[in-house]
Image (cartoon, rainbow, N blue to C red; front, side, top):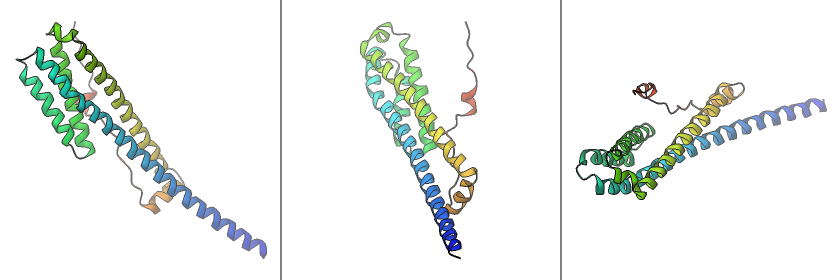
Length: 184
């Protein structure tokens, strides 16, 4: 009879530990996702903060290229005012495309292309782009761990008990998946 009581206590303890373990696991994974999303924001903000210096440098050399400079300024403003994840990603992509125009513009201005400030800003932006790509990858990896934990047994049971929902991946648009045409 005593062994039944001990067995019941052990079973209750194991179940309690499982509840605590899975609750904590979902909290940790959710926090990792939130942190990785915040890191994307940090990198996008760093990129946006470099844009005014880049625009000033380009303006000094390319005074009649106002449309490209205005596009970059507008894209930066939209990125800084974006409120949700999809808006931030979209605005960040627009800023990246606008910056490509600035760097393409530099090809027409050899003095600008050779300017040390411009080259330094270009290198910083390139490094930030790498960090943005890494941060997006880390975010999606965190989503993968989180979603896998919610879908496999016994995590699936605990996820439904705790109301844990699937979280979306960051995805690129179909148009961006196409291979660029390269002509020689």
